[in-house]
Length: 133
Image (cartoon, rainbow, N blue to C red; front, side, top):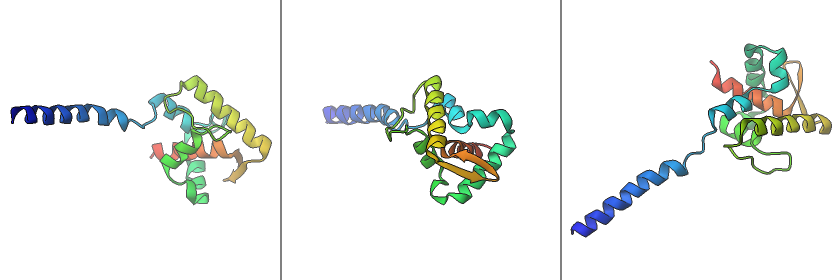
């Protein structure tokens, strides 16, 4: 009986250690900052304007009104491949910059509150709107 208890307790302990690491799907704080602030737009707009654009975009595109869905879309490169959530912030900035540029080149733009934005920028504004009151 003691062996059975030992095995059960060992299995429980291992499970308790492994499960948190498996469900570690959150994006690093540095990456969140990159994902929620459109680089060029943040130089000309204040936080309230970006938040308003994000809220308007979420209402305009109901299929993308979920924060997790938006992050998933932002963490997909132009080829449709997933980008690691643990990507270094410099690489993530570059990837997002490339996505914005390609959005404009391909006409993948949206008008929100009078602003003509790439889909990537609009999604970044939408993620930002979740993180602010």
